Length: 215
Image (tube, rainbow, N blue to C red; front, side):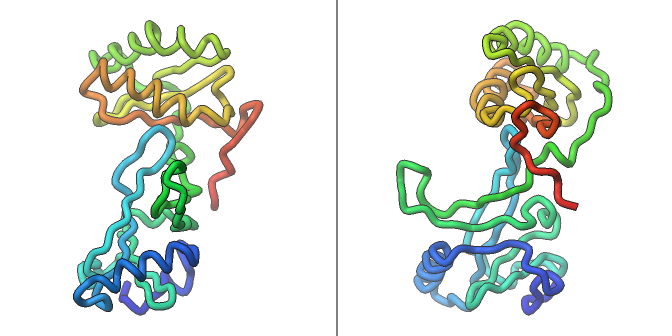
């Protein structure tokens, strides 16, 4: 996709005026600001969130099928592999340092709506069994106090896929519980695991907080 395209006429992502002004201020400090672009890339996942990175890099580094989206004088590049992970995201700027101030990406997309496991995979391996031990001995006794439970669904290439149930299904704090509690406990105890992904159908919980995946 050429630098003059806008994702086939569709604005894949948006940027607030506050963020636009800040980024343009950064660009004006560059030697050749017209040759720079804001790159939005997915660098991984944590809990049920994509981790997004923002950086200023040369516009001509974009590959032929990367998206180059123009907002006034600013070019934003999204690598082809990240199109669906950041579609409809908004780049924003927060001035409040106590609320994670700075540039941030408000992304409506999450890993779990793209992952479907109708039945648990092969959990007989050593790594899977050690993850199950962590869930049984550390995690579930803790979250049981809130009526929750966590079940290992599959282990693939260093990622443990969990399904949350009971009070954790549809809970607005499920992402925090996963990223700050469950994921930490598993990674510390089982170093072969590098990430934990929630594949729960939170839509069917008592307090669903995920919107339906966009078609």
